[in-house]
Amino acid sequence: MDYIFDNTIKVYDNGRERILRLLDSEYKEEAIILTVTICEVLLKDFCKTCKGVWIHHHYGAFTAGLPLKETREYKKKIRDYLTTLRSGAYDDFLKSYYVYRDVSVNADVDALNEILFEKNERINFQNLNDERGARKAYQFFFDIDLKENLNSDRRVSFEKWNQLAKLIRERHDIIHAGSGSTMTTDEIRDVISSLDYLKTFLVNKIGSYYSNQ
Image 1: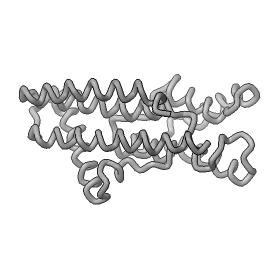
Image 2: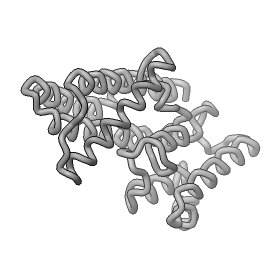
Image 3: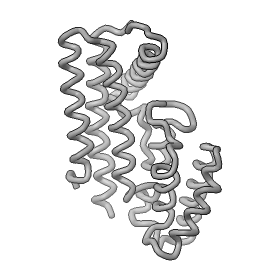
Image 4: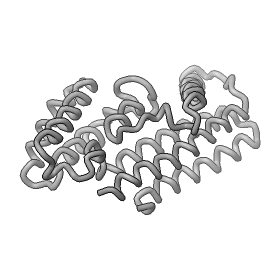
């Protein structure tokens, strides 16, 4: 199933090479801006590309034909997640679901895709921690905690998560306040290494959901 991820990996790897060249020339601020961009692209593209295993992956089958108990469970997950997004997300989902319910193999997924990725940008993949951020999205879509998967050691992964959050804040200050970076080139390279680890983890983990269908 590697072909599913090919374009996402290609975009990430190309951006990574540019960042390393910037760091070699001590262009830290530019490297930080591009690092946040490839992080966002990595997380957003994985999410969109892998909609075939959204939510119901751990049931071992597509939602069509699931027993009533499991069907009720995943529909509650949809309701609860969209309610936390506010901005009318759940109401919009119900309207979209009405369109797809009799014409789609998986109306839930098609309706979610429409209201989260086609009509509105309700998820902010540059935001790691709030209700509309990347961590909550991955927990909802894939039952994956991003914070735990930037390193094989859980404690170290939490440290890497905080380091990534710091880099994202610095990107904001660089762009919006004209600030310089307080991070060293080695620290920025460390963030890149943790994103490399996350990329490999996502390929293996989400790929396993497809193989179990």
